[in-house]
Length: 128
Image (cartoon, rainbow, N blue to C red; front, side):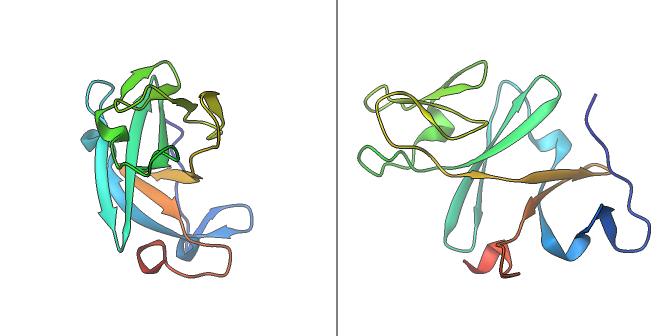
């Protein structure tokens, strides 16, 4: 079961507002067998579905800057880069094998929509 947040007015949860997020995909577009690669602005993001949760990471391995996580092997919450087998936890971005970390993004599910959090300064995700 997904965490579904219902909006009343423009509130998502607590002090977060709907304006703090923008749509990145529909829930049905992200399946456990097929990660969803999305390009928003100049950034490429991969959405992974693990059980009832969806995670978002930048599609860029820090080893040699290849955009290949959408083709990687997902084992539980660990994604392995197909180029050189570095692996990362998609929840935290921390390296499991290799070094560095990958960028993760905060998501919210509202109805059947997956929303990604904009930057802390309010800049739309698609603009940075």
